[in-house]
Image (cartoon, rainbow over all chains, first blue to last red; front, top):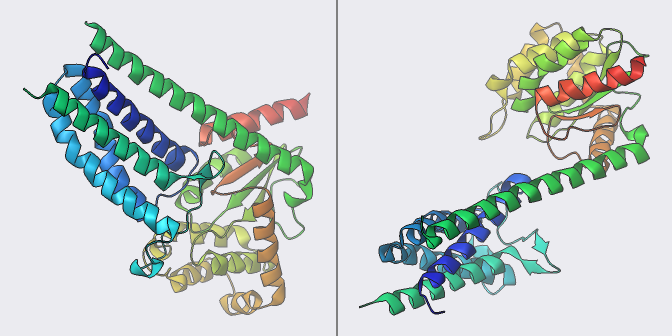
Length: 138
Length: 219
């Protein structure tokens, strides 16, 4: 990476792809997101906007504002991944009539689960943002 | 405009186009699979117990999977009724029940009883009219409100409630659910017009599909 701007662009690409994917699963395929997915969406959707603007305006502060969102997303996605993997006992979550978070219904590309993808996306965005901020710090 | 700004716009455009393309492809896939299912097992579209509105020998059959507690079904009702009025000799409506909401099963059984009492139409309209009062998304539905509306429309409620307890009512409901599951009906209302489904959801699309099928049948 000769130019750190590409790190920012890449982070935005990941966030946009994740946002588009989440919207596709929710709105086109009609799967209702569970509560944990909603929290991850809350962290991911603004990233697609903030990072896009930061790229467009070449504004380093955009990456600073985006970082807490990305890290929060890592935490939520990690929790969700561990829950689906059965590491965290399911009894910790009170269930209502809504959609179960632990009972993962959707797998794509032969067995890749959505919470893993979410975790991968948030981790990648965090790493890219940290690298960008390091390279651009005075 | 510098190259970076142009890159951002380009990427944005690609993502939007990819999304729309994927959406179109997915929806076509669903539609095709559903029409194929309907063609393979067309006995599942119309059952002996299914209520029919309009001429029995109409060339065009609209099958509507319908939930009495569903707001979209309620909103669609006047459009469907209009279509029947528009083509009084060509189109008939077959009503199928899709009890997706809590309390829908009980109301469906009452509608089935109303059909046997010979006053399905007024009871159906009264139950739909009162839907906002009895079908709630939070907590349990207020079935007694739906029952009262049905009774006010001329239903012998006691007889209907007795009918609802019979194994026949249970079997009817089971058949409906079995059919809608094999036809991949996941939302209400879902329409089949001579076995064809809507490419995208909406009253105009339904009217266009019906007009097309009527045109074909008149040739």
